[in-house]
Image (cartoon, rainbow, N blue to C red):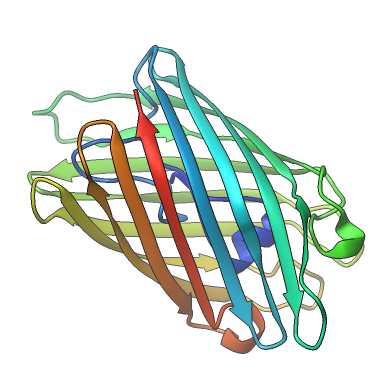
Length: 254
């Protein structure tokens, strides 16, 4: 959820994450992720776009590709390759390759359908500085995210969330915490809707905490093809962090 972008700068701005397809959605189009990996031997492929507008800039992913693969029971491999965009007010829009994201999701608690305890997993991510930082298309540094996620289903309802620690090198930067939680419902056999709220500690020296929310959902055309969408904004320091953000994408599962 995912989840996503998704460099640390993108997390700060757009709060996107990753997903594994199921009757109730998880991960994208939200930033809050879930512990459920892709089934062993199966694939998820996404084409997506996302961006965040602040007072003096719009940035995000013009178009991106995300691939998840169930490499073993309870184990998922993950990669995102984006074409980044940055459009400062009064300047021209910059586009080009962004930072590549690599990750491994591992679910270490997998209860049965009648058990009361939740699923729990980890999803460490590495952001590789393949984008051009001087053009605003990358961070210029290797970043790591170390989260723990939990999930519980209740009939048509599901809830999941958690958080983790970002290692955020760079001049003026500091490491920071991110937490988020989501509630969603399978409204019809094809449509699931949900909402999330999230919070992040300062990611720069002298910076301030940020919070925000997203509302969105997933429409299943059939078992293999899905449309994902969300929109939201910040709740703290809105002009500097998130006046408006969106995500939409198409997912192919097989």
